[in-house]
Image (cartoon, one colour):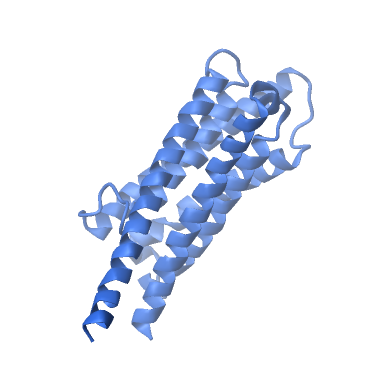
Length: 225
């Protein structure tokens, strides 16, 4: 019986440690990756340079940090009430959208000046789709803050739909970043081993975020059942 009790205590500790380590790792990844792209693109040196800078800031930093706010093991404002986390989350998402729009405008105007066609690659098409989805996701979050706007919808159902659509949005952003790393600009700027390390950043972050969101959802389902 004592042995079983020790096992029951040991497993949650291991889970808590790995979850905390994963969250801390994700914080580090999104910061290091964003700084690396900023140093590589040198924003301000050209019109194009603002595109990778703003897009990385949007999808690697702001969006990741916005989701990590709700992590029970890695939130920087873990002790704050859920309502406060929701407001900060929405602010970060608005910053994400603002950066994404600026990054989209930079590349669109750069192509216009150089007489190049717009949205001819998978990176361009998916990037445009992702920016539009982020905008819709931010607007759809308003009823979560002001629940009186969502007549006939329960707050629990709205949160569930928002979490599911938010995860899809984050995965779209991560794929857009990965496709951006396949661009001629990035592949010509880094060596092969640096490319693989760079590609690992959004891929690993996406896996950890996906695990956080799905784990939180499954935990709620178990409590309700």
